Image (cartoon, rainbow, N blue to C red; front, side, top):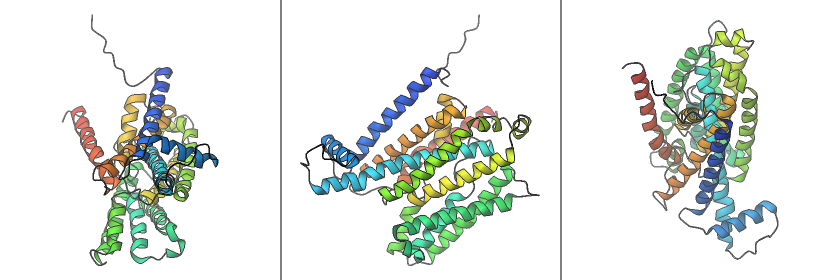
Length: 358
């Protein structure tokens, strides 16, 4: 008699799935507390609890025994940064899921359509030339978002053949648009005085950074995330069918052209908004949909909420590492995510080669 192989993953039972989500929520909560506590200045948990509860409720439930500078570090700097890290990680993971459905390729990520490079070019142009300075702190964000929109419009225009857009054409167009905007960005930096503050700011931003996080920016990116998350949850069944192929989806009554357009619009809006507040952070949208899919399965009704928790928790942990590894200095968070994501990407390629018999 042959022995049946027993495999824990993917989690088929609903109770196991719920348990996994609860565990990830706890991991996320603990990571957030540590993210607020650790840094160049270490803060006691009692002070963190007091400051957060007093500010969230607007009442003085805990007597103020700490210095005003300590409250400012917790509430004005670290708390918005931690929540921004979660939203950025969760949002990039959502975009990764959408791109993988659109291209039917598990190695696709949010930047496959050139959105990241377009946003970078828009942001760097604002940093270098200051043409949106009248918007204050929102100038770079607006420039990045406009760049993202221009890049996706170009990608779709290039990919359109007889008013039809296929996944392959879109990916190839995205590569071309990425190369073009990358060249524009490098040209702007090259023609600016090397060593200037503008070049340093642009270079740091392009590596991914959460340094400029604030409650105002957090509201902006959270609204975009919640809107996209809501739409994606409504589309989960259609996404499942689309993964089976366009012909199958059409057979069961799914309007594939309309669905693909919706996916592109959602991914563009969310990626553009995220890149505008954090800069381009690679590998999150590639890695964590893939990891979560191997744990909870391929059904998007389960995959989407679980991926949000996993991707969000990872970026909070990555933010801790970015502030602690070289404290009191700070590593760009994009560098930390790449250290994890690049080896995993190589692992996926190697795994794919083995399956193909290579």
